[in-house]
Amino acid sequence: MSAPGPLVLVLGTADWDAAVATNQHRAVAALARRWPVVFAEGTGTRRLRPGDARRVLRRLLPGALRPASSRAARPVPPGAAVVAPRLVPHHGPATRALNAHLLHRQVRRWAEHPGPRVLWTYTPFAYDLPGLADATVYHLVDLLHENPGVPRARLLAAERELAGAADLAIATSGAVREHLHRQGFSPLRHLPNVADVELFAAAAAQRRAPREPVAVFAGTLAAHKVDLELLAALARRLRGTARVRLVGPVAPGTTAHPAWGALLAEGAEVVGPLPPRELAAELAAAVVGLVPYRLTPLTEGISPLKTYEYLAAGVPVVSTALPAVPALPGAVWTEDGAGPFADRVLDLLTAPAAERAERVLHCGRAAAGHDWASRGEELRGAVEGLLAH
Image (cartoon, rainbow, N blue to C red; front, side):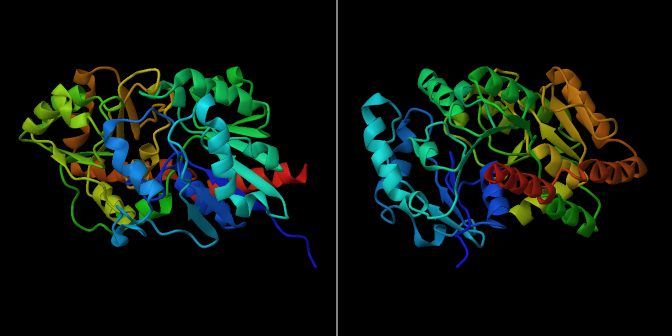
């Protein structure tokens, strides 16, 4: 009989049914194309907020608060399974032993697997699981310690501990790579976020009607990341000429921000989260894609996934001056300040029809190669290389 093949455990920071698909969801699908994968939903990295009570209860009492219709909101790819670990929602010395015991028990299938065990984690709170793994990968897509409400010191300490056990660390931006280097991780690979290029390109190719005078933002509307004042100023400039559409979930506390009311008063349209195909059609109907992030220590490390979604849909991008969003002639512009940002968006919206049509083709070409098909091969190759050693 042949020896058992590898089993991959992915420790996430997000729920599988999160409104917006993240790097984690796509990596699970990519890895599951070759090996069986267990995805352990996120146990959280920040301190609990009042609005988290429902999520915690849903995790502790599965089925009690979760409608049956929502349980398969995001299809699980063939070869993958999802578990929702029931842990104490706190990461610290007082709960470490208990959480380690609970987590190990709930991923027993992986822990007792007779073949190679691969740990692919998005959280540094791995609770000694690297000691059971034949290969451990830390995939950092954000500067987690810069998020509001996280136990910064404990998180950084957990990363330093993980650095001693990880066989590879993957960073999605230059700032994240530098952070991982300072934390002691080696070797390091820099793999910026990519998109499901084929899906968004197909939506652009299928569109027959003229594109609408719309500047669109796709992503989570979180006041600590998104510059709501800049968006309100943009909506004010575009009134009577074009619309601002905001596609995605609204993070807790955002509607209480002073600029939220001004943004809505200026006519911005909040669409809410959309399934992937509907999102692709939404972007393919727009003229400009927005990356209106604040410039903070947190966003310094962000590699916006939406950049290549916009480009694949044939939509030129206007971004604030994020380090991980380089300008690309004819496709991506980075602007510093609300005035220049709005000027650039208006220029793109009011360009002649022939120029806009040519730009659609140029953006599509710019997205080529920045897709999950090729990235999936890279991730699977990384695992194969680690297991070979």
